[in-house]
Image 1 (spheres, rainbow, N blue to C red):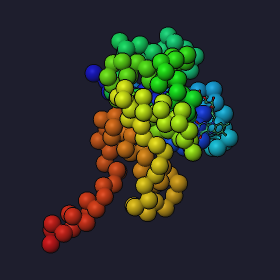
Image 2: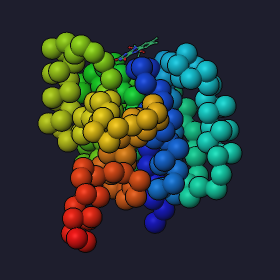
Image 3: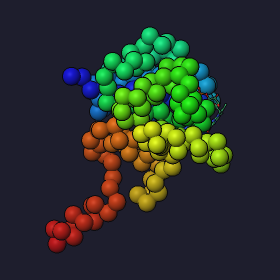
Amino acid sequence: MRHRVVIGITGASGAIYGVRLVSLALEHFDEVYLCVSALGRQVLETEMGLDVAEMTRRLRDAGPSRGELILADPDDMFSPPASGSFRHSGMAIAPCSMGTAGRIASGVSDGLIARAGDVCLKERRPLVLIVRETPLSVVHLRNLTTLAEAGATVMPACPAFYHHPRTIEEAVDTVVHRALQHLGADVPGAREWRAEDQTVKGEG
Ligand SMILES: Cc1cc2nc3c(=O)[nH]c(=O)nc-3n(C[C@H](O)[C@H](O)[C@H](O)COP(=O)(O)O)c2cc1C
């Protein structure tokens, strides 16, 4: 069976999380279904100067990758990820707005991203939400708690700094690598805390 993953990019700040996630997912999965919300497109343009066509062109031109990138229309409820019968390894939404989190938490499947997230919960498949908002209101916190209780992994867009990232990409990847691992991917580039030190000590 082909290994498929579904990725949503919504209109929270941090479009780079979505772009890096798609880029790395193409190395680990056979098929990457990508759906970008209307606001996701606008924030991508604002933050990275990219429209979706240009982003996908760059990703496809980046070199040979394992995966095939398939673009899905956010209004197309006839797209495969809208149905539980379409089997895949899970879904990540990066960045995930509080609007989309709220829609999934309340079962409002009014677009493909919210519906595909809802499907993951009902089918008990991994759903990783790289949420981004600050500060968080009680409404946000309640919605995130509901999502965690329903089985989603709520993974705030909070990079780790203990590996001393030198670029924004390296910082973003500390989150993206974890998201891929939660989707079942083996990510050789993901660094582990002090694992290298232990290897050196073990050799001595
Ligand atoms: C530049 C910009 C940045 C935004 N950043 C955030 C954010 O960090 N988190 C958030 O929840 N919403 C943010 N929003 C608001 C969402 O885009 C808005 O709630 C939208 O309706 C979300 O729709 P979507 O989830 O379908 O993409 C931002 C909007 C703009 C224009």
